[in-house]
Length: 370
Ligand SMILES: NC(=O)c1ccc[n+]([C@@H]2O[C@H](COP(=O)([O-])OP(=O)(O)OC[C@H]3O[C@@H](n4cnc5c(N)ncnc54)[C@H](O)[C@@H]3O)[C@@H](O)[C@H]2O)c1
Ligand SMILES: [Zn+2]
Ligand SMILES: [Zn+2]
Image (tube, rainbow, N blue to C red; front, side, top):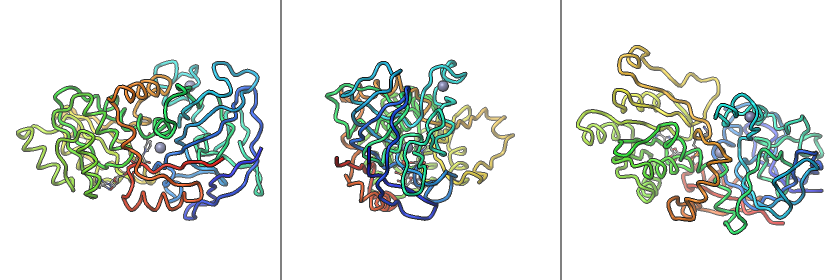
């Protein structure tokens, strides 16, 4: 079966739209049709050369659609089912899954090499084998994916909104609710209001933050943050520091969540400064893999009991959190409709990322044609 997909050959280049052949699903795999795919900043870290990947690769790791065919050993899914693609698979059996840390599942290890669990590459084309980002490749009309990478959802949910629950929503929401452990009455600072940060804002607001300070140099992002529950906004970390000092009478914030596009040492230092004794800095942002982006006094961390917490997938378990977030969407407690700021065709994927970098999007999405 053929598909049209957005492929990256090397860092610094644009995505190329190419026709590829999809490998037939094996016993544990499913053939899917992607209807929508979100444009997350993580793909750009490969484009910018921050994170290594095996080329050629079909990009995109935030998607939803319909199951077309299931492998002979696949249970729990049937053709016609709707699904959300989870950017990290869950095997349910490895040490990490078995101890409640499914976001670290061993099956996710080859996400940037792009071969399916079992070793096969999901696509072939004029340049041989093609991998898929996070073994999903949602910038493709169709794909073969592992059963552990998809979560079945109710058929009546809108798939464009559901797609965002495969990465951006749980990552941001969970950065606040799980990794920062925001509690009622907390003071929370979120640095960077994109598709991830806006969900950290709505997670922190739902968890009961009293003072919720959104920081972003782009004024339109701060307007969005207010609509999602931010009580205060700041254009710079220095402004946020002063706001928090006033709001907490000099005590400091309970937590600071970093969701800027590119992790740099200055933001980590500002976040470590803005929190109180016993406070937590959550690092969710990606950036240049080799850079030392934490430069802090370890003695100060020890003396004041501060915590620096790395966060992948917001500490979420897709099997639990994807249905929960969609249920909260149904009852109006989680906003998804308002996250989508632009819709693109697959051919417009590079335009979509230009818009992301120009701060024109909270989340842009690709609507696939079939
Ligand atoms: N840890 C994970 O599991 C995970 C998952 C998905 C994405 N990410 C990462 O999260 C980050 C955010 O992704 P996104 O899709 O929301 O990006 P985005 O481009 O939509 O948003 C980033 C925002 O950060 C703002 N910003 C830049 N520098 C800033 C600064 N110094 N202070 C305050 N704000 C600043 C930008 O103006 C922009 O609004 C990326 O690095 C992405 O790779 C991590
Ligand atoms: Zn993502
Ligand atoms: Zn596992």
